[in-house]
Length: 150
Image (cartoon, rainbow, N blue to C red):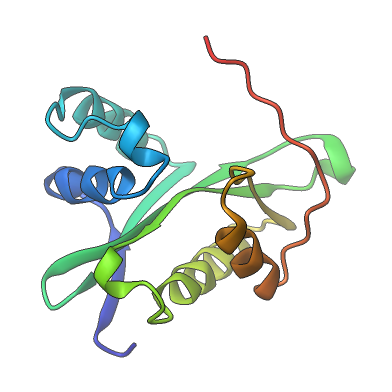
């Protein structure tokens, strides 16, 4: 993967990121790539927050992967700082290439650099392949997550 660059996302990457978010069975029902306005507004908030690290993986000038890493200071677990991994996507043409592993290596290394003692993520129950992937990286399914749509 030597020709791969993982870098901070820019506003110019938002369209490619949203396209990857929508290119999936679940994302196709949740995303609206034809209207980038809400995504660009959200990007501005993310970009201004030093605890948010939205990155893209780029190969040959093309955005081929993304993830968001959020640094969460807290009091529990003896004030352990956590890193939350969200919105991981790999372009269809890159799936199975090891790119997901490279993105997670970056995220785990960045979490360590930020002083985190724990990396966590949530995943949809329907994503069995993703569950196997996360477990292959050493993640354990230790909790049950809940969401409340507002």
